[in-house]
Each structure stands twice: as C-alpha cells, then as structure tokens.
Length: 154
Image (tube, rainbow, N blue to C red; front, side, top):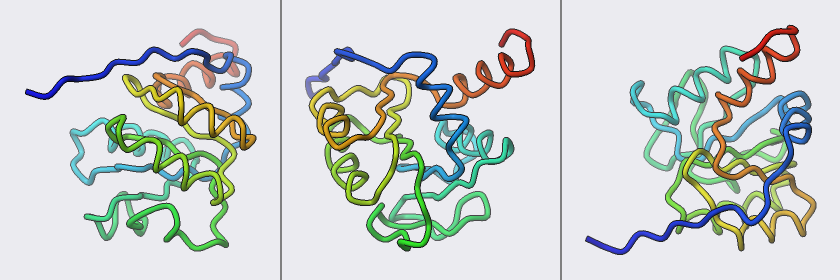
C-alpha cells in the first residue's frame, strides 16, 4: 500500500467568509461528481441542488448527473456559464490541477471537501483572489448557515 500524505490546513476561512460564499454563490462546479447516489459527492450535490444552487458536474466519465450535462474538466464548461464555486471531490494529488483550472475560469472560490487539504494549491488560489475552504463539507456548512439565517441552530 502506498504512503498516504495528510496535510492540515495552515489557514482556513472564517465562518463569516463561508457564509458569504454560500450566500453569494449561484452556480457550483462539482469536480469528481459521481452518478452513484450513495457517494458523498452525489449526496452533497443533490442537497445543494435541492437548496437552489445550479450544479455543474465535472467528470470525464459521465454524460449527465442530476439532470445536468457533465463536462470532462473545468475548461470545457462554456464561458457563458459563470462558476461561483468549484467544489472538489478528488484525491489530494489532483487538487493543484483543479485549482490551476479554476483560476483562469473565473471561479470566486474553491472548496475542498472534508478530508481534503492542499496548502500549496490553496496559496495559489488565494494569491489569485479566490476564496479557499479546506477540509469542510459544503452540505454541513450550508445546513449550519441556513439554520442560522432562520434564527435556529443547525
């Protein structure tokens, strides 16, 4: 078995910054979105879609997921589709390439799901002006944010 690297975020956004990302985003490109309903990527994307976000699947092995056309990579998404957040469900070794594609694509933020951290890629994204969330679940954070907006607790 290969050696697994485990990074911890050197810095991460505040709850206020996460709230800002969630409240301003409309379109989320989900890199690594699976069409299998039991996969985390599918569960999270389905939840986000049910809560009003447009999901753009990014997976070269899929033609369509959750009723949306899938694209093989971020660069293949038509430029008229504005991407607010790139939500990443890929192994850490693939994160730098995803971030490097998100920057020229005009995404406003990259979001690395629970267990995903890549400090060097995060630093490049921040230097390009993108918000960066690492090791946090967008579904969990959205539920917290939505409950707070309703005046309740998650």
